[in-house]
Amino acid sequence: MKQVLTIQKVLNNNVVIAHNDVYKEVVLIGNGLGFNRKKGDSVPFDQADKTFLLKDEKEMEQYVNLLPYIEEKLIAFIQELLLFIEEKMDKELNEHIHVALTDHIAFAINRAKKDIQFSNPFLFEIESLYPKEYLVAKDVVQKIEERTGVFFPEGEVGFIALHIHSAVTDKSLRDIKRYHSLLSQLVEIIENNLDIQLDKNNIDYHRLIQHLHRAIDRADKGTIISEENKLAAMLKSEYPVCYNLAWKLIKVMQNQLNKPVDESEVMYLTIHLQRLTHKF
Image (tube, rainbow, N blue to C red; front, top):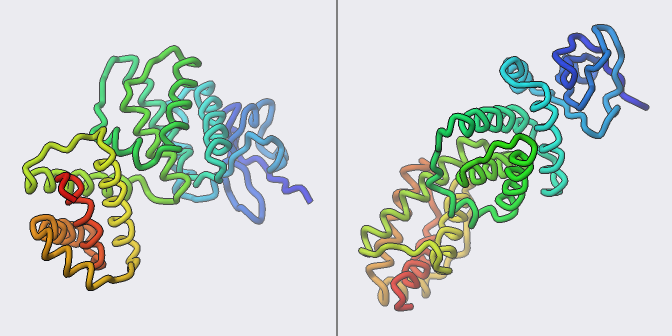
């Protein structure tokens, strides 16, 4: 049976606030959804495949407050982009991306028009850690440039990739940025302690940040990995500098995440660090 909602308020041609017994008050978003409609009219929930539903009360409030500052055409276009992202990622997007990405793209366009440049210090790491999200974000930026004639700096691809990653993993953007900030801190500690400048194009750097990211994620989730006592003893004996540095990194993770980190992580970090010194 079709779910039918009653319109409470038409915000614009593409956005309406509606109500039914199941969803209570919700925001429905879709191309032309509010056109020629008024309060009291019925609207089928599945009227168009370009319809999104915002059920979370906080997300709904933020989205409604955001709308007056954005052109209607842009709101409809961003819905197209969200459908494109969902199709390319082949995953349902968390509804928070409607607020976050709408806000980000609208103000990114304004920044670009005023030639205000924002650097993205994690651009390489984002591309390395989230390759699929990064490629989709590149396509999104290209679509924006083709539609609006406004050209974004390269760093915007990274920011949009983070929004996509947040939406498909249900991780908050705040947590993702916290991970990246910690990752950057760990890389700086490695460079200072080993007295080296890491080459971001080197495969060993790629492997290191992949591992550090997984280690941070495991620590945050409290995941335990298997312990190899013999291997740990060998690494401590053969590569004391890297082994001690690995422990230092673990302690930084523990302090920043405020959670214990599985001691077995030391072994794998030691191996990655040793590779960086080209002696393993």
